[in-house]
Length: 494
Image (tube, rainbow, N blue to C red):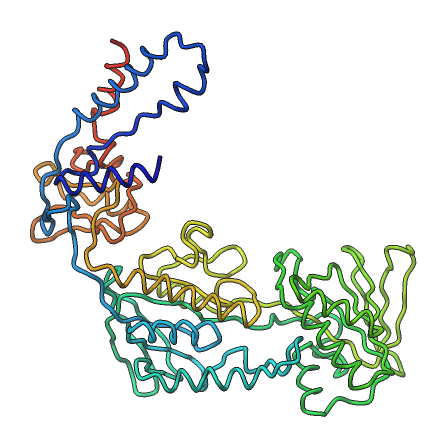
């Protein structure tokens, strides 16, 4: 039915008719299917439903043309010109660089804003990959491509401090070492990234023999790892608990990767991984199997019953309850390595952009299935760790996906109303402003010169809240105008 409705709306547009003059009568679910082959009463019920739809359409009124709204030949009321072609990408990590490069290759000018003094984000700290590839070489190649793209302007040591204008016609104020500069653009890709969550558990920060996975990886890459005989890795440190109930996705693979690397460097070292659940999803499961084959010992623990770490004369003593045996297990360790989770870092920017964060502190996606990577304002998109924890390859793919969404948005040359958008009868509008306060999308504005309320159709989603609160019935919603439902009910009672 949805596809056929779109076809009929297109035909009505060609005929110069408003799309709001189309009504769908559900004869299949309401007539044919419930009554089956009985047949009795089918005709009367079908005639009643069709009559109700016709009565509702007769009760509609053609919208009075508001200021700035004009008709065109295809029946769509054009309400604003095409969108600005440029884009601003906030964040110079894997997702941000991928989004900027994809947009530039499609012909859009891009302002790539990075708060740090160099590109790369969290990618710079990754020294090895589970598949054996060199992450730093891949990073250098991507940075070179970004630097070599003439449509990308890289702004290091900069941040977005103010966003003005409306969807498709934004004006951002960027602050850098040289002061503030305003740029005009049509879309924003938020790729502000994230970082390792801080922790004070398990003697971290008190005993130098307690490291994070990132610190262990760096020491192995630089050849500064001390002589060790036993290493204990503790998973889900600060994650999947009340403070951070989400899984950070990358920690298990990082631990297994480092355990394999440690075994390759020093096969005699005993490596123990204390885990709640091993989540090496996809082909990374092979890395987990390789670690078991290499002699890495995996010990499960549950909450309550977290591992306990204590300093001992010869090293560290780790005690954990083994759930299968039902007995405590003690391991003497030279190093304890913590797998801390990932947390977002873009909270202050969310306030600047007027966006909401979800309960975990990441940007709230509008609709994961219908509008992937879209944020709550038109022309704003999210990618990478700003969206949720993920691997570099996933962040790259998501950055490219956000660029595709932004490019499709910027390509629109004529913006029309939503199918169930509202219109304003200016003769009845009292300029009270209740619709402006009620609109959850910021799509209602007051025209000070005309002294009437207007609709920003770039932002209007057709929810109808403003039509409900209007005391003068000056705001009407297409297909839900005053009197339509009563007219349909009157027809049903005949």
